[in-house]
Length: 234
Image (cartoon, rainbow, N blue to C red; front, side):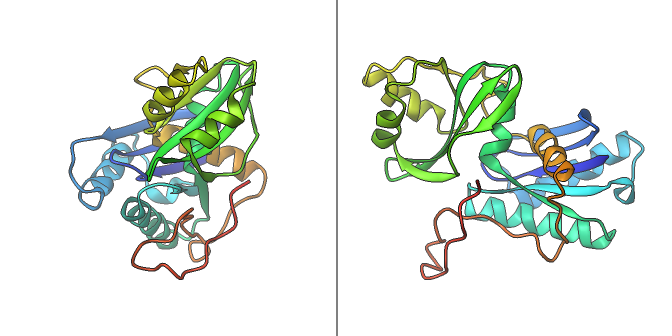
């Protein structure tokens, strides 16, 4: 199964093509330019250099959140358009679940965190054992102190990943909770992990049409405060 995956949930933007657990190509950019300007050139570049066409893909995957409202909108809109244009299904991937795959090799507790401001992080925790991840919590917004209290007595080695990892590391260290940051090249979310998570979801039949693909916001955008919040990703 070939999957084109997009990741636009934070400052960096990336795209990747996978086939049956193998990454065929990927592109990553973190230059401060807008995702609307950089995403499609990356997609075009990796498809051209792999001698593949969009129609060769079996599905289009995208990180649907949590994360930057603007970034997620751009990524989801692009994925919907790409999937619709070639009549392919789509896969919506949790940003946090995808980034956990960066450190699935690190046996113990994987704490995924994105800076949600207001002294909070978007978070999900996973157990990693022999490369297999087991979700322990839904995607959620949680305060740093609440997260520390929840983790305090867990005896497993703790690995932190995500753009909010430094915030969690500082708070955990302050409270005497031993933990480690993921290596610099693995700490941020990227499309390669989105592709691998999408393959797992596709194997479970969790494919949707382009029209059904939706963003996942843990908080409503400030411009739309009354919009109903969707159920957490389990």
